[in-house]
Image 1 (cartoon, rainbow, N blue to C red):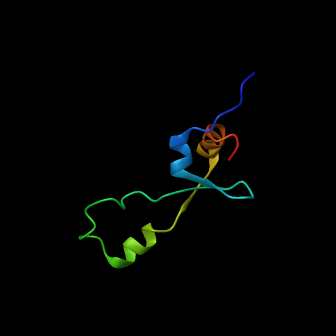
Image 2: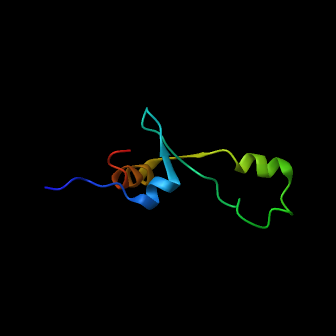
Amino acid sequence: MGKMKTKRAAQKRFKITASGRVFRRSTKRNHLLEKKSSKKKRQLDMPIEVTGRRRRAVRELMPNG
Protein backbone atom coordinates (compact mmCIF):
# COMPACT_ATOMS: atom_id res chain seq x y z
CA MET A 1 0.00 0.00 0.00
CA GLY A 2 1.35 3.41 -0.98
CA LYS A 3 1.81 6.46 1.17
CA MET A 4 -1.16 8.63 2.05
CA LYS A 5 -0.56 11.97 0.34
CA THR A 6 -1.71 15.40 1.43
CA LYS A 7 -4.00 17.24 -0.99
CA ARG A 8 -1.94 20.28 -1.98
CA ALA A 9 -4.96 22.57 -2.38
CA ALA A 10 -6.05 21.79 1.18
CA GLN A 11 -2.56 22.39 2.50
CA LYS A 12 -2.59 25.89 1.01
CA ARG A 13 -6.01 26.78 2.44
CA PHE A 14 -5.95 25.28 5.94
CA LYS A 15 -3.57 25.23 8.88
CA ILE A 16 -3.64 22.52 11.55
CA THR A 17 -2.27 23.39 14.98
CA ALA A 18 -0.28 21.05 17.18
CA SER A 19 -3.39 20.38 19.24
CA GLY A 20 -5.36 19.41 16.11
CA ARG A 21 -7.48 22.53 15.61
CA VAL A 22 -8.10 23.53 11.99
CA PHE A 23 -8.09 27.16 10.84
CA ARG A 24 -9.04 28.77 7.54
CA ARG A 25 -8.94 32.25 6.06
CA SER A 26 -11.96 34.55 6.29
CA THR A 27 -14.20 35.08 3.28
CA LYS A 28 -15.04 38.49 1.78
CA ARG A 29 -11.42 39.68 1.96
CA ASN A 30 -10.41 39.56 -1.72
CA HIS A 31 -12.02 42.50 -3.49
CA LEU A 32 -14.50 45.37 -3.07
CA LEU A 33 -12.52 46.44 -0.02
CA GLU A 34 -13.07 50.19 -0.44
CA LYS A 35 -16.61 50.02 0.82
CA LYS A 36 -15.69 47.96 3.88
CA SER A 37 -14.68 49.77 7.04
CA SER A 38 -11.18 49.45 8.46
CA LYS A 39 -12.62 47.70 11.50
CA LYS A 40 -14.36 45.10 9.32
CA LYS A 41 -11.21 44.48 7.28
CA ARG A 42 -9.18 43.98 10.48
CA GLN A 43 -11.77 41.52 11.77
CA LEU A 44 -11.64 39.61 8.48
CA ASP A 45 -7.87 39.20 8.85
CA MET A 46 -8.37 36.84 11.78
CA PRO A 47 -8.30 33.11 11.02
CA ILE A 48 -11.57 31.21 11.50
CA GLU A 49 -11.71 27.83 13.20
CA VAL A 50 -13.24 24.99 11.20
CA THR A 51 -15.56 22.82 13.30
CA GLY A 52 -17.89 19.85 13.00
CA ARG A 53 -18.03 17.70 9.90
CA ARG A 54 -15.97 20.15 7.88
CA ARG A 55 -13.09 19.70 10.30
CA ARG A 56 -13.19 15.94 9.85
CA ALA A 57 -13.23 16.37 6.06
CA VAL A 58 -10.20 18.66 6.14
CA ARG A 59 -8.31 16.25 8.38
CA GLU A 60 -8.95 13.48 5.83
CA LEU A 61 -7.49 15.66 3.08
CA MET A 62 -4.40 16.27 5.21
CA PRO A 63 -3.51 12.93 6.83
CA ASN A 64 0.01 14.07 7.70
CA GLY A 65 -1.09 17.57 8.76
